[in-house]
Length: 245
Image: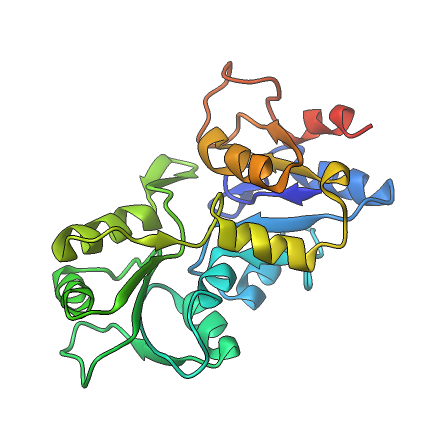
């Protein structure tokens, strides 16, 4: 099973009722679970640690949009990061030269600008990222989600920040996360299963649902995140269990 995190397993790391038990039941049935998230800010260890803190072992089971974005650059390229440490970690593993956007003028040009959720984003960082793209750098967004669900409602997502940089430079960004092809390719490479054997569980038809279509696998919609109750068939991840057989 492929499972989204925000709005499916938790809201701001607060577990959604029934989610932890549902994951345990799915694994107890002999099925594997991979967590496929557009959250690019956290490192793999942070994702895994947060899941462990609510009782879900996830070592090696998290696939994030930052990992997909890293494969859109080549080893040795110089990349300006307007995002969290998860992006920098993935780029370092790829062999790219990471330049952190701290709002200072750049020392030299960069080959690409990767933008994700960045809680310290401000005008100075927007100016630097936008100017780098105007000067010829490729603009890559970790994902296009303009919002993500929290216990207090929807907060701005990484896609909102990408849109700001794109508007400054007058270009369209290339996106890596769900539902885009880079994430499809990454999951296909990591998950050892046929499309017909997989199920994607998510809270966004336009993201998780389209991702499932591109993977040619089944999709189960939950209504505990972005999608409000009454939109689809399933209300929470516990109800998804009945659709697995």
